[in-house]
Image (cartoon, rainbow, N blue to C red; front, top):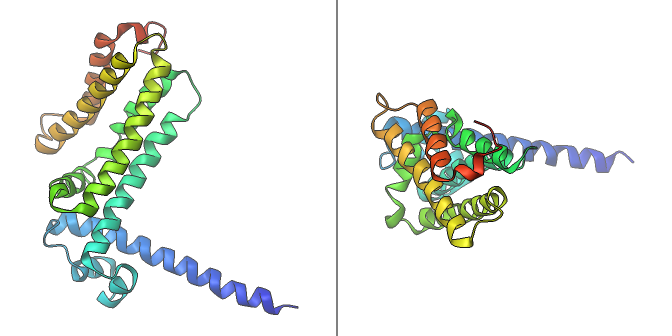
Length: 213
């Protein structure tokens, strides 16, 4: 009677161990990219960062290309979890919009341990089909989610206006992320968030007439 339970437990433990190893390697890959750059990151540097053998890295990811692709996917999934949590939080459409903006400029999204990683991969998009496909899929989900949110914020606006405002918001985020990456001494995340909110309020004041400051 106890045999099935005894069989299932080792499988569960193996799955948990495998998940831990995979997480360990993905975190190590991120650190390796920050320390060595994307081009000089290898299975060996990642294994060294993780304190594991190179054979373990090969077992889980097969190749450097596979490991780096999954590292980028992991970064996108973590960022998407941030803004989706803000998007689905209780509140008015404007409050949820402000929450999305706050998520965009939090440390987990664009802090000093994240921006170099983003820009390392984005610099390779045109050279890597895998990276480009990942980025395109994420960008499409993000753009659609923001379009839907702005339709709620501006229920009487035409579709062209909603699309334009959505593009403005994404452009502001992208631009401030670039400033934060290239000129960290001149730009802060808090300052970028405040400026983005101010610009959107000026561009579409009707959206904020009864919303938060």
